Structures are given as structure tokens and as C-alpha cells.
Length: 229
Image (tube, helix red, strand yellow):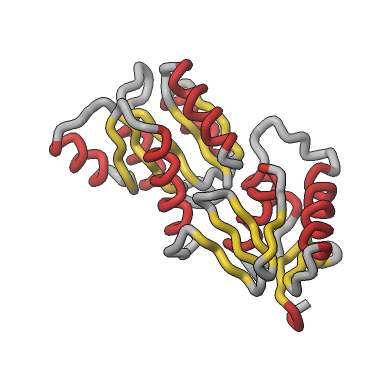
């Protein structure tokens, strides 16, 4: 899942981004509201961690703009991160289109939990554990099991499997996977998606599970279970 952290405080933005990357997310950083609005026009973001007080375009205006004119890739979830802590501030933020509101200073663990909740809501999943066939993925503990057996995944493999499981059965193009699982530094002309899909597919197969990643020639990949493949 791809996240945009928007904050003019570079140290805080970088710290939040670093923490989210350790959780397996693809994360980009915008240094202000105007930069954020530019980025969402060409980046397919699933969620924005959005500061309110910025010198160019206020976070509330960014939020309203995205809700009034969503980008072609779809309207991302928005988690506001701000020092404005009154009830009226929270009401204004939520009424402006935010999905959640977290007051600074905050513990990273709470931020991570709120991000998981928002992304589950986006994928219509109501549990921290995703299950497709005999594959279980715990988004909170970062654990993967196939048929009850633990499977070790790299952060990128974990992120890729999470995206496949949230869209199980759908054919996902290489471009879509690149947009949602990799950050802006990924080279679209490399074979990074194919290689990562290949290693993840092999790990699922070696674990003896019935759930597999199929290649749909000319279209992309899809996660299927048993007789569906």
C-alpha cells in the first residue's frame, strides 16, 4: 500500500516515513500542501498522512480539494496529523473530509494502528488478519502463515502479498502493483515486480499451500486458491 506523508517539518516527516517503511509500506514525502496536490495527480496513493498547519496550502484546503476533485486514481484515505487539539479543530478536520484525526505528539504505535485500520476499511476488511484460502497474513504482527506454517517474507514480499490478498481474485497489472506497492523511486523499466512476484510465488509453493499467484498473460497476476487456478 502506498502512502504520502505531508508535513513541512522535514525531520518529523522523515521519521514518520521511515517508521512506515519499516512496516512494509511504500512511502513518499511531500514538504507542503502544494507539493502534495501535485503528487496525488500522478501518484496512486492509498492514504495521506496530512499535517494541517503548512505555510503554502493549509492541510484543510488540501483535504477539501481532494474530496471535491479526486485524482483519476481515486480518492485516498486521509489521516490528519496536527497539533490542533480542540474538539472544534477535530470536527472541522473530519467535516473537511478527513477519515481520522491524530493529535501531535503521538506514539508511532498508535499511528501505525490507525493506518492499518484505514487501509482495512479501504479494502473492506474488518480484521487485522487477512485470510485467503490457506494463507493468513497478520498486518499487526507482520506474520504470514500457509496451512498453519510460518513463512518468512521480506518487507516488500509482505507488502506485495498484503495487496494481493486485499484484492484476491482480481487481475493486477504490473503497473498497478508498481503504483501501490513500490514508492516513487522505483524504476518502471526494471523487472522488480516480476522478480518479487516470482520469489513470493515460490515461497507460497514451497510451503505446500493451495493458494497461488497465477500469471494472466498480457494482463498481470492474480491470487487464487485451489481449483480457481
